[in-house]
Length: 301
Length: 269
Image 1 (cartoon, rainbow over the protein chains, first blue to last red):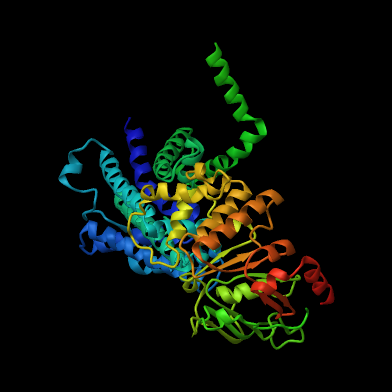
Image 2 (cartoon, one colour):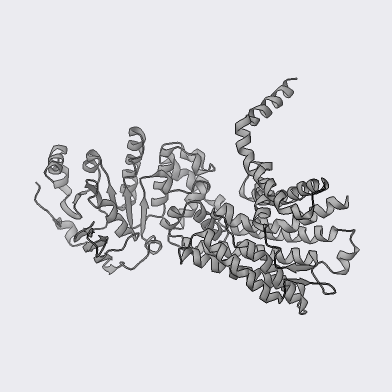
């Protein structure tokens, strides 16, 4: 039971990453590698600030802002500098590694004996692992509501149109460069905030904690899409969170099969690859028709 | 007939102030190399409010380049572009959308495929305006969009909540056209907007186009390869050749023009 609770809690906290990456990967329609740098950047910023005595909520907010700066740099390199997005992201990601070491002063910084978002009397009164479920739920609800509001404003619609058809967007007066930069900033801000939350939950920040992050964030997006199919935009955002929780369940099952934690990135990549291949398999083996037929037969019986 | 009747302006329009002027506009590709060529070569064009100009010209004559220079996708290397007498040469494509709308030949270019028909119409209604953090209010406009879509006579009004990507090419191009004229732009550029459609759909869209331009008194330039359309529609016809306007008729003179005369003119080029 506690394993399941823990998986749900982790799923909710990590869903912030999935939602952040959704803005670039699904709406702007490109893979942003910056996230591998912004995730530990957010973690390092929050942990270093809390370590020096800052309020954890304020420190998490600072992580969001620092993440936005990283997104801004990638955005400027991509739009104004005309550097391909993959390369722009890798440049900022690489630079962030050194910045993270500077911020923390060492490779690993513990919050042992310091405060955090997960340390207060109310959360302590909850059963084990329910603290991350509670914090994760609050964060996800707030973030999802804000995103739904934003995407349904005139600005949000212009942002969606930029990813959907930049030529058309420019032809009706949308400043597509500005929209792209804005998307990268919000996205990376959210991912840095995710890093800050995960680090506080773990009790430490590590300079290597960004490796494989993009795969985990993508997994929650793709699993959500594979599991729930055709949805409206708002539903798709909720599906990302559910996908993130499902991904934790899959990991839980796989780890029960006696894989070590060192195999985690290999397993993440395999899970994501399988999910990405599912639509191909479906076509190949005519799964759709098989399922349809079995449903029809059942009804007839 | 093939005399260069550049700027033969009728008496009634001569007193009007021009909407758009292109003065000695040239565009150069491969500048400072052996392959240096001028696509537009000292082109002059004056467009008056209410003009509906059909633009003819063989491939490579510079028709699309002309539209790109007006639309701001391409800067004129020489000469000037004026709107209401003021130079807009330095304005970006986005800035020019406050007075200008454009429909492309490819139906895919004019609409956002994953957004619905209504969402696309809403986006285009804010052409050239600031887009802020204000709720979009899509539902308030649905009735208005239904009426608008029904003028296209192709069932578009019943697909308002469909993603644009799953429309037929004709419906999609009709939507692109509606999005262009929705905010009544001062200048409308149609770049062979019916060319990718089948003859019947193409005819339907062309009729709807003509009706809409007449009803809203829009000023329009329309590139076409169909001589019939060039003759039938608009009050003025121009022919581009080698980056210059080599033929320019309007009013009665255009009405008298026959397909054969026009065809012969092309033969002589």
